[in-house]
Each structure stands twice: as C-alpha cells, then as structure tokens.
Image 1 (tube, rainbow, N blue to C red):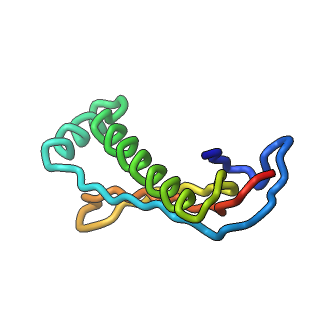
Image 2: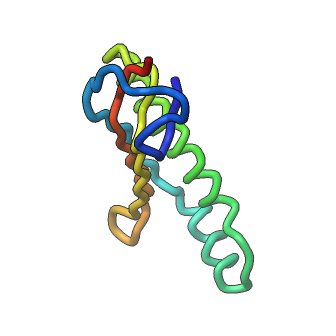
Image 3: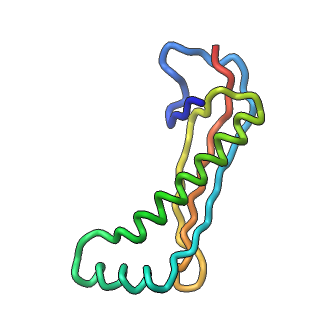
Length: 106
C-alpha cells in the first residue's frame, strides 16, 4: 500500500477512486506519565512519555486507514491529512485522525 500526502504518485496515474478512508486512534495518558510530563515541562526538555503515546496512536490510525483502503481494493491512499487533538477532562486523551482518498493506480 502506497501512502502519500500528495494528490498524485510520480510516474503513476489514478485508474479508479475508491472513496475516502479514515483511521482514528484515541489513547489515554495515565497519571504517572502526566506527572512526569509536567515535571519535564517545568525543567525543560522533551516529554518522551507523550511522544511514545503519539507514536502509538499514529501507528494504530495508519494501520486502520490501510486496512480500510485494502478492503476497498485500493493499492494507494493519496492526499493524506493527519490531525492531532487533545480530548477529555484536563486533556487526558490523545487523538490522532488520518484521512485520505483510497485509489487504484495504473
């Protein structure tokens, strides 16, 4: 499966559009990670705990997007857009939403 943020793949043309596909993942960050992230924010530096959660959410969302495109018989998803949101009370949940157009290439 070819995944691209562009609306075309160099050297290939779109033979058929199969529709919009979406992959989403919402993960909660536990209290201990929140505490350590808060300390990291105060003293400076990167928050590894949140970076790991974002990476995990992104991987889940891409896997879902790819699976849905494959179910439609697509061999690529073009025009991919990634959105990140913080949800829930006190921003305790991380959401990654990925959408694109499933296509069949020549």
